[in-house]
Amino acid sequence: MWMLLIKSCVQELEFGWRVIVGSVIGFFGAAFGSVGGVGGGGIFVPMLTLIIGFDPKSSTAISKCMITGAAGATVYYSLKLRHPSLDLPIIDYDLALLFEPMFLLGISIGVVLNVLFAEWMVTLLLIIVFLAASTKAFFKGIETWKKEPIIRKEAARRSTSYDTGGEEVTYKLIPGGPKNDSTFTNEVYKAKEVSIFDNMYWKDATRLIAVWIIILFLHVSKNYAPTCSTTYWILSLLQLPIAVGASAYEAVCLYKGSRAILSSGDAVITWKVHQLILYCCCGILAGIVGGLLGLGGGFILGPLFLELGIPPQVSSATAAFVMIFSSSMSVIQYYLLGRFPVPYSLYFIAVASIAALVGQHVVRRIISIVGRASVIIFILALTIFVSAISLGGFGLADTIKKIEKGHHMGFDNICAYNP
Image (cartoon, rainbow, N blue to C red; front, side, top):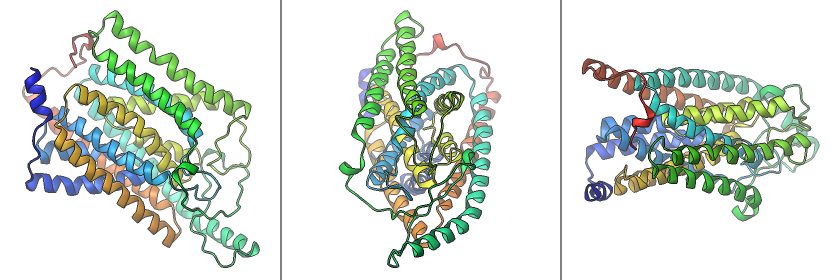
C-alpha cells in the first residue's frame, strides 16, 4: 500500500493538450479568483476532473494546492500595499482575527457534514449558495458603481481645497454596507507601496499563525485516530475552545474599544454584543459551507466583508489572507494522506501563483485608470456565478450517473468513513 501511495505522489508530469488547456483555464480562474478574493476552486475542480482527467478526490486536493498558491501570491502582493483611502495596511488584521478562528472551526464542522451528506445534497446546496452569493455581489457592485462618481467628485474637490499640487488621487473612499448612517472620514489619502516588514502587524499575524498551528495539529492527530473513537472526538472537540476563545478575545477588545476595525472608513463604530455574535456566527457559517463544498470559503467571506462596508480592495486582500490559513491546512492534510501527485501540484501551484500576481497587477492598473474599485465586485460576482455553473453542472452530471447505477443516495455513516 505504501508503495502505491509513494507512486501516486511522485507521478511524473506529462505535458499534452489536456495540461495546456487546463493551464489556460486554471490561469484565468486563479487570476479572477484572486482579484475577487474567492480562490477559484469552483473553476479548478471541474477543470482538473473533466480536462486533466484526475479522479474527484485528487482534483479536490490539487484544487486546494492551487487555491493556496493563488492566495499566497495575493497576500504577498497585498502585504506591500496600503489601504485605498486611509493610512492603514490593505489587509485588515482585526477583521481577520475576528473571523479566521471561527472560520477554521466551521471548516472542521463542514468536513464532517460533507461525509454525512449525499453528493446530490452538496450539489444542490452549492448551486443555491453560489447563485445567492453572486446575485448579492452583483447588486452590491451596481450600488457601489452608482456611488463612485459622487465620491470621486468629493475627492477631487477636497484635493483641490487641500492643494495637493495636482497629484493624482489613485484610490477613492467607497462607503457602503450596513452602517450608511455613520459619519465617514472623507479625507483623501494617497495609497502607496511600502516595505512588507513595515506594513505587517506582527503581533496580530503571530496570533493567527498560533491558532492555525494548534488547529492543524489537532486535525492531523485526528486523522491517525480511529473514526468515532474517544480520542477522535476529544481531538475534534478541543478545536471549539481554541477557536471560540481566540475570536471571543478579539470580540471583547472590539466591544471595549481597545481595538477597532478601521478599514470601513467609519469615524466611530460602537459595537453591540449581538453584532459581534452575529459576525462570529457568520464566520462559522462561511467555514461550514466551505468545508461542506470542499472550497476555500472566500465566496462567502468576500460578499460578507462588502456588506460590512469594507472597500473592495480591502475585502479581497483580507479574504485571501484568511483563506490562505484554511487552504494550506487542507493541503498539509492531503499531502500526509497521499491524495495528490506532487509534480502536478507544484506545476499548478506555480500557474495559480503567477496568475494571481498578474491579475492583481492588471486590475490595480485598471482601477487607477478608471477610478472605479467596483470592478473588483463585478469580478467577484462573475467568478462565483461561473463556479456555480461549472461545479453545479459537474455535480449534477455525476449525480445522474450514480442514480442510473443504483448507488446509495441518502445520508452516510460518518463512523464508517475511512479517510
